[in-house]
Amino acid sequence: MVQMDLTALSLSPHDRVLHYPCGNGVLVGELAAKVPLGIVVGLDSSDDHVRAARAAHRDLDNAMFVTSDRGEIPWKEDFFSHVILGNRDLPMKEVERVLAEGGCAMLESGEVIAVKERPTTPAGFHVLN
Image 1 (cartoon, helix red, strand yellow):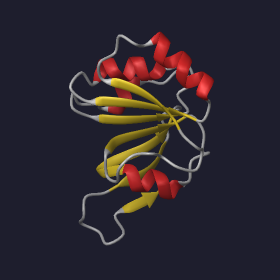
Image 2 (cartoon, rainbow, N blue to C red):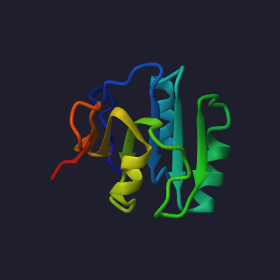
Image 3 (cartoon, one colour):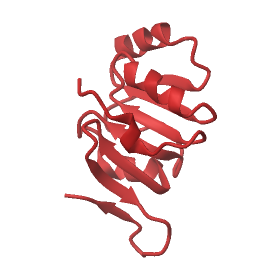
Image 4 (cartoon, helix red, strand yellow):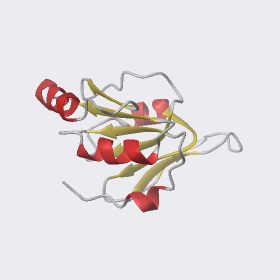
């Protein structure tokens, strides 16, 4: 697992963050501490990983762990201010759907891979690369 530099994220206390795949939830726990008034959702396709993450982080009030099929993010549109991906398994259409205006998607390495701009442009969503 890549050690992510959380200072580069510019998180605010109210941010809503999605991390996929969350594995054992270590990064979700670190992110939850940075957004005490927000929420962090750890998403993983493995039921075992989600159960282990829930057990290890049951003391976090602003974090949850969810199992999902790799191709779908079970969340409403325009919700997350940040989407952090450990790999590129999720379709970018799904990332775009759940990313809020002004939000960004990035890899755990810190590389920004997409931004969803505020509605100043017709397209709004830009995949970088």
